[in-house]
Image 1 (cartoon, helix red, strand yellow):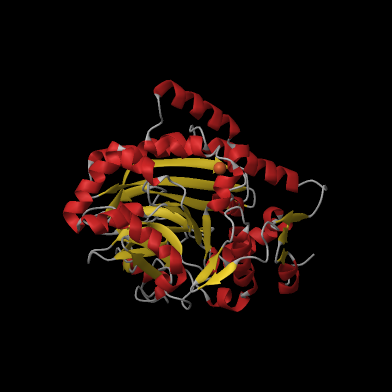
Image 2 (cartoon, protein in one colour; image 1 turned 120 degrees about the vertical axis):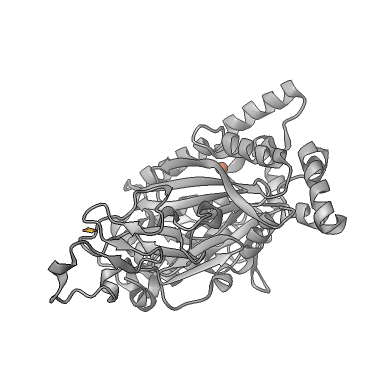
Length: 441
Ligand code: FES
Ligand SMILES: [Fe+2]
């Protein structure tokens, strides 16, 4: 079956999707062009490149790119490719390249914005078509770079909505994450965790707002959390979610799920405000924020009771425990999740320590919660490779979602609205072949 737009459109119904969207390598390749070639994708945080010459490598879909702080202090994002023979210019990871990039193969050099600087033994290039000013001899820039409160995104499409318009209602999650700092700024700190998942990238996004799975998939971690809580009297605030996953269905039904264009969304109302009030770290945090912003605003900032946010194609920022789970598709059945933890500048150290504990215990590779999810994602991938059926159900509360000013809201917290919304965006991106072709590729 070839991948015409008609075929692609037939794979997504209002309340279900064909399993092929998770298993077909051809579809994965097209996603890299039409989703990752068009959307704004999170590249990294500007604190990862503090000084000119500092770089951080990452991927926009299947494209290796480098985020670098240029000499003028601006952040640039360039493809990690030398225009001579195509060598990757910097190795994967974070580092500093000094005042310019130097290719490890034949020592062509480039300014920090990627433009050609020099090539050795120029004599041999004279009287040829070699032109150091021609873009063909520079490292190519990614079409657009946008920075929202220190969070750097890039889009491979020259045209399209601006970053803020793209983020829509989920920009408020980034705002709240930053506002939790008494000076309104955050920085990546404490290293990152990496988790390799043997499943398609979309499953992770769907699961972030899948409230029906929590008491089932996480049953064993709920049992151990309960016994710990009993032994210790209670769990600290940052670990309550472990026990909370075992809440009865009525609890999940009361939550509110928000969905926005482009596949984004978030879940409201999961943390018990009374538990936050009992938490000594939250109290110290409140004092620091009240000094900076006044009590009313401090209460408002800490009162935003939001759990997982989805920025479709990029990952999941978490406001209360200061992290960004960056989701990188590797192949149709492999996904890398990188967990960045943020320090709130000017906040008590205990707030950062609490975020590290959350990352360690809830979603690191050796945590008590994330491996449960990773196991069921792999089971979905394996099950969908069998001839046991073709369609995936997203029927729960289909047709009941309410339209609000700039998005949609569920009438019940167990609604599969977020999945339906993600696939509506998926379909729109995937059918928009013209825009993808006009992009940088
Ligand atoms: S490949 Fe980069 S200088 Fe030759
Ligand atoms: Fe889970």
